[in-house]
Length: 111
Image 1: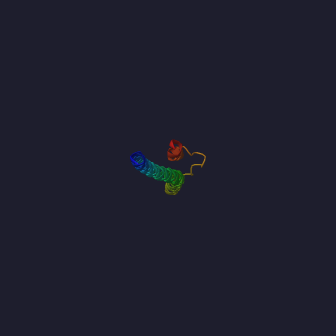
Image 2: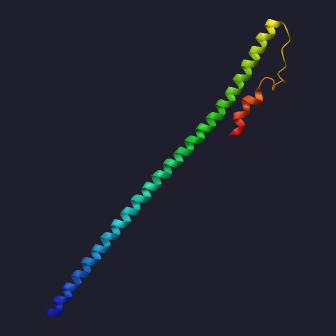
């Protein structure tokens, strides 16, 4: 009877240890899942930031082109006004370097 009682106590102890180990494993798995979820959120946020940066870069390129066209238009307009006041002929559009076109497009080349 004592041997049976001792065996039952040992079985109960083994069961408790096994259950404690299982709960510890569940706890570690939960912590791992939480860490991975946090990493996934960070990666998702990082991807969103990269997409936003690309969108802003494309918008900047577009604005640089608009800015370049405005600079050229403004210089041509100023030339026309100056020519009208002086009575001299207008410069041709082929003279784009004197209009500063290359300088206005420089931000596009740096991207």
